Image 1 (cartoon, rainbow, N blue to C red):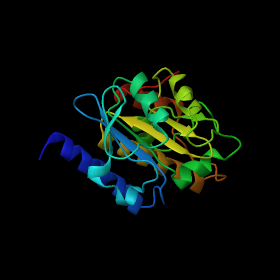
Image 2: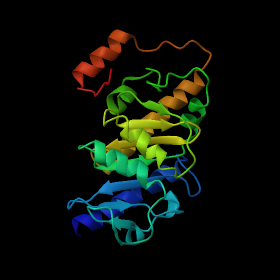
Image 3: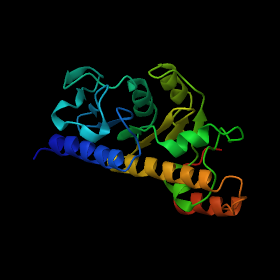
Image 4: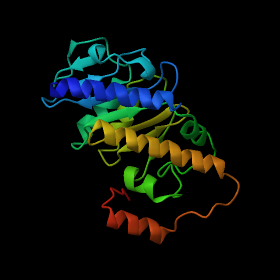
Length: 216
């Protein structure tokens, strides 16, 4: 089995796992991963994570030209922005996960650090998550907003829409975005209960020990 065939199958397997566990529904969400020659495999527009076909994934060359498969997601500006600004990005995932969207609707959220410090893992896997404003679906301005962060964030939350996470590979990106949703779920579950969060000292220790990107 070729490297590209394995990558195609891995993308579809991970996407279906997230769909089956309710992390994104219907034809929502999109996913991409870098190929060894600098191209991309991307989920096609209008497709469901529950039934992606490895052979029909959009295949873009290193210049972003479609060379095989179906037409890519309309959210390509988001994906391209992460790849262009983060040299370590090997994959990008975008979901419409319910708890993270719910948290983005709350009026008192810290836009610069969207997730409260509830567990170590959100910090380790994501660093600070930037809350971006609402954009119309497919608006290229979403990509420009990500570019405006100059590669300093691996994850953003699109208000009233969903999270977007870049990782070193597709497995890492999926794992990180699941951690984002889990942390948002905890935040919503404990909202109004005055939960005991990690202290500033705790967060600093995690950032130092695990070499977390922590844009200040």
